[in-house]
Amino acid sequence: TIAVLLVVVGVAVFITNLILGTGLGDAFRSTGALTNDATVHPDVDTLIGDAVDVAMATAALDRGVVTGEERSAAPVADMPYEPEYAYSQTLRRETGEDGTDRLVLHVKGAPEVVASFCRGMGGGSVRHEAMVEANHAMAADGLRVIATASRVLDEGEAVPKSLDTPHDLQFTGLQGMMDPPREGGREAIGQCRSAGIHVMMITGDHPVPAVAIGKRLGLGRPGDEPITGRDLAGLDDAQPRERLKHTSVAARMSPQDKLRIVKQLKADGATVAVTGDGVNDAPALKAASIGVTMGDSGTDVARESADVVLTDDNFVTIVDAVRLGRVTFSSIRKATFFLISNGLALMTAVVVNTFTELPLIFLPVMLLFMNIVTNGIQDIALSFEKGEGDELDQNPRSKDEGVLDTHMWMRSVITGLWMGIGTLLVYRVAIDQGLALEECRTLALIIMVMFNFFQVFSARALHISAFAMNPLGNPLLLGSAVAALVLQWAATAWTPAADLIGLTSLRWQQWLMCTGIGFTVLLIVEAEKLW
Image (cartoon, rainbow, N blue to C red):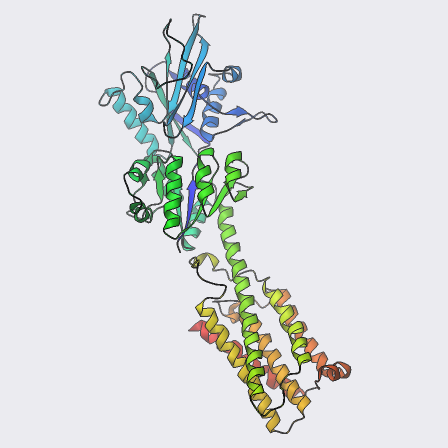
């Protein structure tokens, strides 16, 4: 399964602007702040809202071309920004230079859309060509470009109750904004690629700045082409799936386009995580396998639609969560392997023993004691493994894959059978040598304990050699394994406990022999890892 992470990009920092015309600087900057939904936070003196609106309002306020009172005055009519229209407009009552009241329509939005509303900006005109050239130059630097225009209503012109499509506007300029990538963002996307996660950037911006930002973040591969909302509209349901596999940037996307991309990727079998913080991202966040929004900059609607809220608003945190999730699942897999292989070993020894003429190899109290002392402690300690360090170099596992995959089932069966058969052979040899039944059972029990002791260390890593790992890397596991051996020794050496369980003390040579035989299971697993 290809995991896909869709990143919805916002814009936060004002960078530069370009004025087309003369004497329009103040009008240009004030328009961006007067058709604007940014509001002042009630508790702190700062602007909140859409990042573009905040940036444009801040630019105008810092330069003194508009005041807070002018921005807070109620407009005569207003049409907020909608992705399908790609512009917003606001009609305000203002005082002209001659002191007379007048109505001024302020419009801001996508350059090509706003230009179509302006006088003298028809296709092929000098001013239109200059705007297009400037727009592409700024976009190529990774700036998100917003155009502004305005018009003073004529005296006697009817005041509209609702705003229709604007016309006869005066084009006032372009304003460019950039959201510099966070530190570590490029490296985090590289880690996603190594982890088999396809990262896509979905934005409503023009494709040129979107591609420039994508390159800055390390998105895309040679030959990848961005996909736009217009491209998506011309494709049937089957075609986008193949196209999305070969692109990392989607531009000029509406909320409906984002939702369609998520549904198409999920229909193709991908696990899709969507990050976003705006109202327009809510449908995609809701439809995603995992919706991730920002706790600081995210809107209430986005937080209600998402499954996960990032309190630090940092993409790197998502990558850390992927790594930790894989470590957690790996720990579950290791503990499961350890328990199943040991359970199979005991079952093999007991079941095969019942079909022989030999006395019962283990008494019930022995099995109970061994399970509590050995397995009951060490499988818990396995969950504290910190990981093998290659979690972000592995591809995502299939949705249909269980806790143990085919590879781990084979390892469990091989080692389980070997431990069970090895224990039976030692018990058989001890019986044939005429040793007392208690001593034979003690040898069989200690052999099984030693197998478990070395098996738990082989289970510390699924792929890496146990000999390459720091033996002190999991002090709880090391302590629990040694403590289990000490308790087993005490149960054989302390007469009351030995009599209760049915054991007897062993000579040091017998302990050494049991240790050597138990070590063989570690060699089997290491050979299998090497192979």
